[in-house]
Amino acid sequence: MTLPAPMANLEPTVTPTIERSKAGFNDYAERLNGRAAMIGFVALVLLELATGQAIVTWLGLR
Image (cartoon, rainbow, N blue to C red):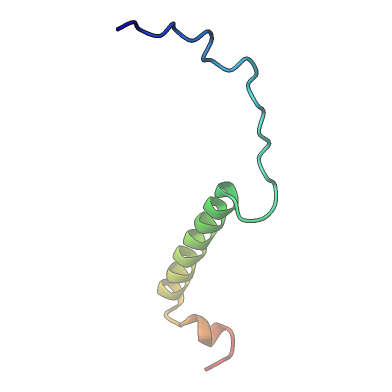
C-alpha cells in the first residue's frame, strides 16, 4: 500500500477583511445596550433609596 502524496499549500494565500456592521443587531450594540440598562437600573435604585419615593411618584403617576 502506498501513501498519497502530500498536498501542496493548505494555507490561504489571501486573508479576507471583514468589516463590522455599524447598524442593526450586532455584538457591540447589544453589549452597549446591556451596560446602559444596568447603569440605568442602578441609578433608579439609588434615586429611590436617596429620596424614599418610587419612580412612579416622580413621574406623577401615583
